[in-house]
Length: 198
Image 1 (cartoon, one colour):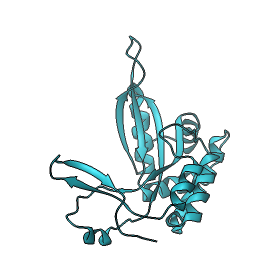
Image 2 (cartoon, rainbow, N blue to C red):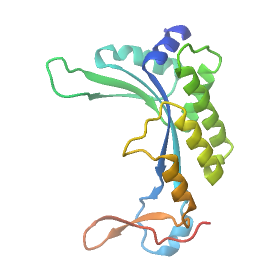
Image 3 (cartoon, helix red, strand yellow):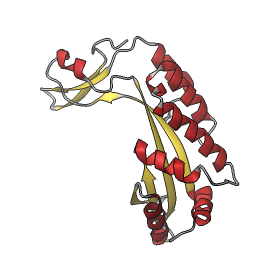
Image 4 (cartoon, rainbow, N blue to C red):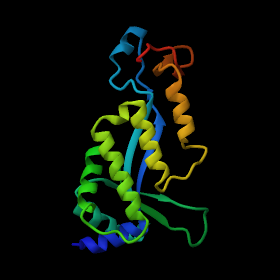
């Protein structure tokens, strides 16, 4: 069994505490608009915390040990980089389940990080606390989480939401962004003509 210091060192080098921000889309097909009133999660923005540790696939056993010690998450493998003679599969230990993230937080909250990863962990823990309090369901709470995320390992890309983009969405009239089937095309299409959840 791996020691807590060993796991801490591994996470300092290969771990990632992160918060993903995305637009919430209801993808369940609905036959009429009236049923949209029963949508369980009508919020425009989704906040998803996650924890990940990466290693090459041949060292997967280390990730298995971390997974067993934390008692959460799962492991998957994939190719990384361009094909070459030296290319190796990469293994990921990963969880984005909120309750699992709380267990990860509890495991690391008593240890002393040495690198900037410790600052990321503190900010990530603050985000988890805001989510626990239901603040991720309010405009103010979402923006606060965005500010904390921007101080972490967050790097803006075309696939990630900046705080300005999130603020713009929140300032719009909060119509649920829904999905339904086009009977002619037999595929999901989207619209924003659902009921007003403000």
